[in-house]
Structure formats: structure tokens, C-alpha cells
Length: 427
Image 1 (tube, rainbow, N blue to C red):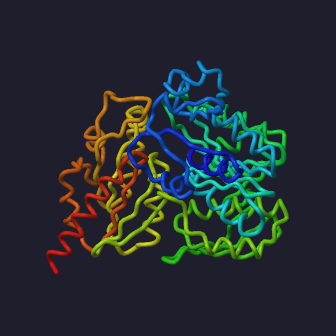
Image 2 (cartoon, rainbow, N blue to C red):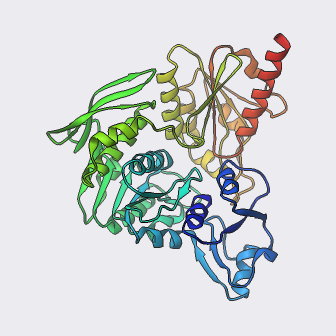
């Protein structure tokens, strides 16, 4: 919603919005753009407004209810995004994981070579005048993305997530197939995903990956502590050698998707190479800092597949350091449904700590706790309290990875304060 607000603001609309009163990482861009943010209150709704309702809210939410009573036009988020899609060559990025990283990378690369508007899930949005491209994140939750009819769609993977809505993996696949059949020019999908391989579409499907039967392939991959280097082939055609300053196999795959779609749109590959080198990442995706002698990584990972990818990236960049994971489970339903998978992925770290489960706006309690997950983890599993992050002080010259989609950052900040205070005392 914050990204969409920024786009509408750029397009000359007068924009304001309502939100929770707790500060979130998507808020800063709104403040910098001069977009006012109010606490939820039906008095915020005034005559002549058009209301755009976020996906988290039903019609009984007080402001939406008031807007209907006043006879105002109320639109849903996907409806407004679809209006933007129709104005440009649009590229949607869908997938259970990797949407934000891939759409952020694609937006960065294309913006460097052509006027590009974009809507990225880390709260970043831009409405560029006379844009050639529109890059947007397409979220599968509650089938929101079936409102979209993009020119191209990148699909990073299909996985069972959102167990509060989807009945199982077949239900998820059905949603993705609907989007595939609404795509106008072409699909770019990860070739090693068995579910994506089975999707039916009415446009050409290009598989990207590292296997011989992929259409767009990365070969001769070299992964170092500086990033990754690889050759790219489209069938038998050599597209070039690429360097990326990013870590983990998933970032090689994300780059392949970007290279493939830009090639199909006849964008100069030398320009693509140059833009890939300058990508700094997206908010809350493998964001690093150093405090005292520790490396601290902040990441949005909240599904086992994402945890695996994040820990793989940390290992690549810091092969000689211990990797300590601090994970905040996100929603009771996801924790119950994927308990064993969470334990397996977290055990890829050298030591694991947990926080209490973060509930969503849609659920407030459940028959599971972080302690239940901790009992399945072999590399630790102790549940940390915000008031006592001292167990993490046992590590020196190592890497702590804070992961979660809730308010995990408050634990991170508490740990950073402990480290800073300790460092000052030692000096």
C-alpha cells in the first residue's frame, strides 16, 4: 500500500492514508514524499475522496464502512494496480518466495536503461512520467493477483504457504495457473520447480535455471565472498558473462529472470550487466550492519524455503564465521502447518534462537508456541525474551541473522544496544 501511495503521489494525486500507530520500515518513504498518515478513524473519511482499501481489511473496517455509507468510490488495491498495468509494458513478479528481491532487482535494472514505474513489496514505489515499463509485485494471498493481466509474468516458485487461506498445494497451483493464463506475452518461470513445470498457459513459457533443459541457463557459476559470476545461455546462444554483488543461489536465479525478460524486450545486455553491478538490495532482505565485532543481518524470511536461502547466502559471504539464527515465527497457522520444515531449515545455522510467535491482523492466538518449534530443533531452539538478549553475548566475531516478517527488529535493536553498551564499557 505504501508503494502504491508513492506511485499515485508521483502521478499528481493528493494522497493520504490511515495506518497502525506503530512505526514500520515502509513508512519513511511516505514521510519523505509529504504523504500524511493518520491513525484509523472514520472521521478521516471526507467528501470527494476515492478510497483504496488494503488487502488486509474487509468491508466492516470502520473507515471503509463509513466510505460506503457516504456513497464514496471504494476501490481495492488490486483494482488500482490493474489500472497502472494497462498503461505500460507491464512485468509482474509472482512466487511464494523471492517476489520482493526479484521485483526490486528488475525495477533497478530497467530504471537504469528506460523510464520505468515500479511497485515493490518493501514499500518502494515510483510513478515515472511516460514510463516504458511497469514492474510490480503480484501477491498470491487470497488470489489477489488474479485481478492482473500483465504483458509478462516472472514466477520464482510455487510453495504451500498461507494455510489460513489455501487448502493445499493444488489450490495454490490453481491460483498461479489463473495468472499464467491471463498473461499476454510470455512467462519466465524457474525450471526446477515441479509445480511451475506443470502450469498450462496460452503464451510462450521460458524456463530459467541451472539445469540442461532450462531455456535460459546459468553455467560456470563461481560463488565467492564478493558475490557470484556466471555465464548465461539462451538455448545455444551465449548472452554473456555476468557479475552480481549478491549472495546465495536464489540471487543467481533472480538475476537470470531479469536477464531473460530484458533480452525478450531487446534491452542491450551490456546495459543490463552494468546495472546488475550497482544493485544495493531491497529493504529487509539480507540487510547488513556491523556492531562491535559482530555482523548483524536483518531479513524478512518467514517460510522454511526463505530461511534456507538466507542462511545459504550468509554461508557464502561468511564461510569462516559461525552463523547464529534468531527467528520469529510468523502466524500460528503457518507455524503449525510447517513445523517440521521450519526445524529442518533453521538447523542449517550453527545455533538457533527463537522469539515468541508474531500473530497477524487476521489471527491472535493458536494451539502452538515457539517452545513447541524449539523442541524440534537440534541446534538449539531456546526462546529469547526481549528483556534479556544476553545469551547472544556469548558469540564473538560471528554472524547473527535476525529473520521474520513481524516485529523481529525490536529484538535486533535490543541486542545491538547490549553490544554497544558492552563495547563502551570495555573502552
